[in-house]
Length: 168
Image 1 (spheres, rainbow, N blue to C red):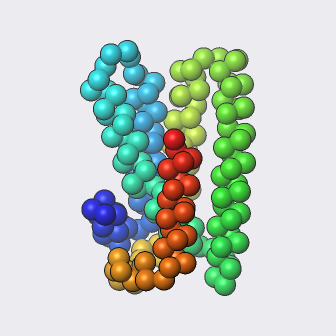
Image 2 (cartoon, rainbow, N blue to C red; image 1 turned 45 degrees about the horizontal axis):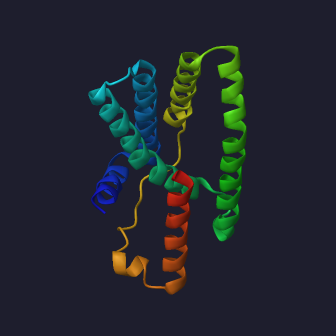
């Protein structure tokens, strides 16, 4: 709960787009550390894990908030969210094949460097978008209010368990 409160304050202060950009910088740092990782180098491995964790904290919540803010379908946001999820799954299916092709033609360092470059380039559009209010204006919802309805709590727990299953 502490990291989400910190992120909420961060989102309110600098906005979702900048929070996403900061998360993507941590993703680039992750790839740079992975590129330089050598066997038995525990401090670098810990730094790698820290960069991955900071990416997760900054990126995932902020990108969903930003997506909801810019969605043209206010009445049916679940349709847009489903399309986002489908796109993610298609990317998750295609990316390993693309990565395997790059590995077959080059080596692991090329794949890692190319990944870092692509992530770094994805920051540029975020910093150039203008005219979108991406800072939350409503006060944070209290925990009890968030879980007041059984259906919402059930959906949240099911989604959380699915996320844990997918990452395992």
